[in-house]
Length: 250
Image (cartoon, rainbow, N blue to C red; front, top):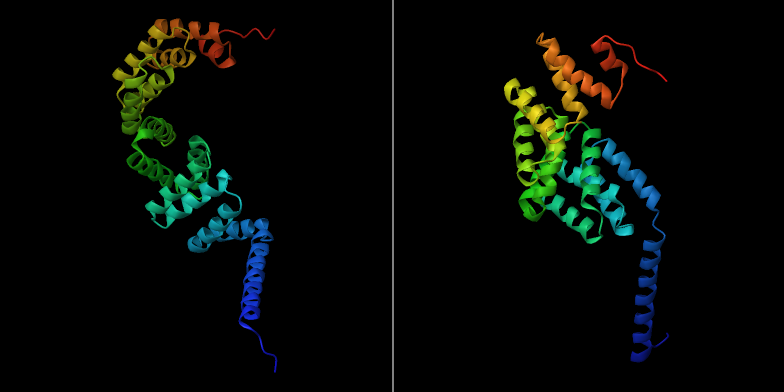
């Protein structure tokens, strides 16, 4: 029978530890990222959220700067109702210097793709609560979401919020006017479009809306005034047809 001294035993133990460590390291290095991504996509497609989350964790571990992975992982966490985990994923993305807008747009795209757009809204509201220093950026994202959803009360609310910090911003003013019109408050909507023209006389959208509005009301004189101004900015067959004139194609 072979006998080992204490020193020989210690050397053998160290060798085993080194071999195990090398094997683990090699396993990590040779892990097939594409295969894991394929599994993650399959689990996500079939809504196996726990398994999908596990795959996204491995993907982030192996490649920490891929925005799309965080977006899918955040939506997956939203489907599991795990707000703390959503914030953890966002903070990890931030630590990798991934642009915040890219994360938001990724979450929007992924949540919309599975017919769960409210996950995007909920995520924005969660981040607004947990990271209040991002409020202005998030409110802009929320305004865009509510415009997409044709949610008149929220469009009006967030347009006013954004205008409080940028009172002459034509995009926010257009959103506010649109919100009023969508809510049925034509008086406020038309007044807002006219206010836009005071600040931005060549605003094509406002001119077109006003021209159409007065045309539908039977006030052809006012309609023509706005539509002719619109035509000088952008000569389109549509506006020309409303005015009853041809379009110079040359």
